[in-house]
Length: 250
Ligand SMILES: Nc1ncnc2c1ncn2[C@@H]1O[C@H](COP(=O)(O)OP(=O)(O)OP(=O)(O)O)[C@@H](O)[C@H]1O
Image (cartoon, rainbow, N blue to C red; front, side, top):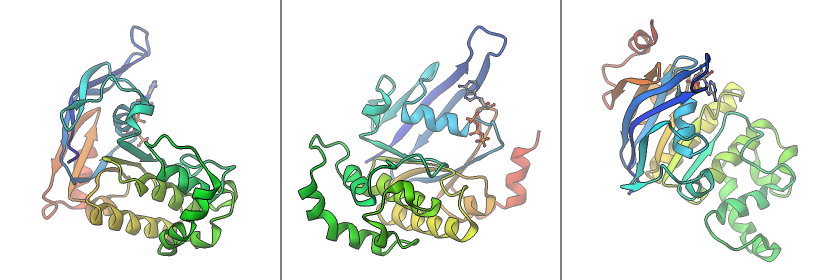
């Protein structure tokens, strides 16, 4: 079970200065086990901030974050990484550039475990990693011994996604993870995302600016505006791109 509950989250930055700004404003959202949410909103609506509050890189000014009733609010980003993984927009984030693809995969495999990186374990795991990457786009299976820093953006982002999902996180956060890729590569990674999330029944929150993708993927659409939820629906039958745009208007 992975139910994430955000209770009355408020995030104020630059408190007490002229630049004081309320980014998230008393936001409450219950993400049920197996939900695949597409998260929409205009630039500056607070989408990335919401993900940062969930992953622990930003502490909310007030409010609570519960994972299956367990209070995550006081936990550091490192501690939360046991439960939560994230793929960012920038392909450079999420993988270690001076390690090979296989070494990165081994690290991701050991997430939450104490044992270090040992070459003989890597050798043992190679056939498995070959099998895992064989079904992926971007010929990643032929790049297992390549330094991640030498991969293309699409290969690197596919690897980041695989790493984020390898150890089956309780919560998967995707922050426009295909936005920096060319249209074909982006579509391939989105299809892979859909397959992995639905087949493994992962609980996932995916930020996108592409309305068609928000309608196509996931079981629930959430729209943020000025730090608040203005639409939260599981019923996409009456939702169109035109209708979504009305929630963006001032
Ligand atoms: N640490 C910070 N200090 C000051 N302002 C911040 C900080 N973090 C975010 N903001 C501001 O808060 C607002 C919300 O930012 P956020 O990145 O969450 O929006 P977003 O919905 O993800 O936007 P985008 O679609 O452009 O990525 C923006 O106006 C941003 O400039």
